[in-house]
Image 1 (tube, rainbow, N blue to C red):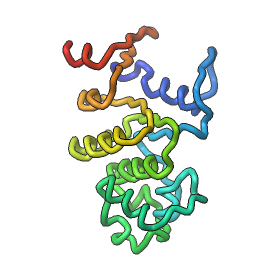
Image 2 (cartoon, one colour):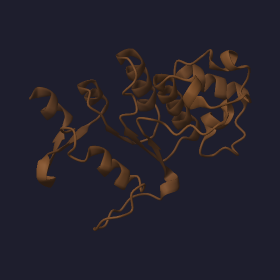
Image 3 (cartoon, helix red, strand yellow):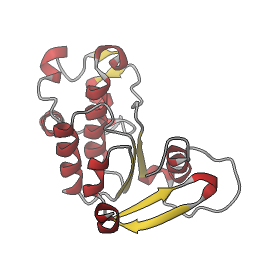
Image 4 (cartoon, one colour):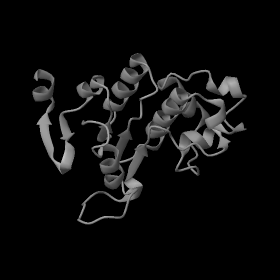
Amino acid sequence: MGDSGVGKSSLLRVLAGLWLSGEGTIKRPQRQQLLFLPQRPYMPIGSLRSQLLYPDINNEMEDGRLLELLEKVNLPNLQDKFGDLNTVEDWTKVLSLGEQQRLAFARLFATEPRYAMLDEATSALDSKNEEQLYRQLQKTSIPFISVGHRSSLLKYHQQVLILKKNGLWELKKINEVIES
């Protein structure tokens, strides 16, 4: 948490290994064990199947499982809308940002990374969809870190790192933040 511009997204990108410049030491899992979900998900031109399985596009997950994932993220008709799982599209042009964010969560559930970093990954969603996705994520064994502006995200976490100006920060238990 913290005001705009204090470095929340920057910190998450460093932790995820996406930014390598700077000084200091960060001990973290290997990059291939992390999945980073940004506010605007990476959606290369390709099939719906490849979107669901990215970055492991060689994964041979069965169609039925992929359709279950679309259902899980409240996109049950996406395959029908575009023909089938192998239809190639420029997904950034045919899906709203909210649909892209839900598809990115389906990707998270499909790839089951060791850790997930969520950078305003539900910013384009209504509260109902946001709650559904976070509740689904809590049912997995995937530890996750979120950056967001909505206080509604607090209930899905045990601790909150509050970033302040001039590099100051504070780590609080969630109940301390909710009570204050």
